[in-house]
Image: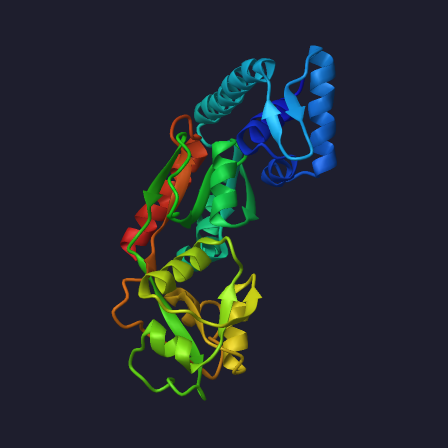
Length: 302
């Protein structure tokens, strides 16, 4: 019996889908299926009933699930206590961040500062959507996740801590756009003026924008969906459409903003995201606490 097998059991029980469980665990569906089968062979019982339509956990599976959660929590607690005893002289810190968080928080700067202060801590980082990163916190695959507050409630074992003020979302147009010289604009005006360049579906930014249009009862034409916000702005600069992005992406950071782009505040719209850190509610590591304290202190001093 291996820890990863227990993590797979948890993921499969919570998603009822081999595809979704494999995606959550960042592994191939075939690998996850094989590991579940091996665990069932070892235990001599079926943990999940599979049909062509769904996956259902068995009574025996519920027993394993309960123990699996306890074991995963215990392993996380052990790692946290060992790291605390090491006094931040050794250990690891696993940080996940959305591209929006990395931009707004200037994550490279904080990584550098933390490494200089605690050179014995091995830093590991990954990128992903807010939903993916929050789930990895819940599954003890990350120590801290930096992302916008989600519209959905957190898992019960995860807590959100806000970092700084809300980040407004703004419209960006090309310099040739008919609304380019306005001081502000509305969603209805933007939708009537042409197509939109949008962030990929399922991300927090896209959910916020979709919700704003739904509330305003305005429909829009989406012609391009991209996975990088900086690419959205480049498309806008070439006159391919309009976009709504966090304001931080319209300001210089390690380079000049895209030429030929205009930024417009949104009229009568309280459209913003709240950036913060997700951690496990209990037993988060000493390194994660130190990293969060560094961000909070330095951002306050800026």
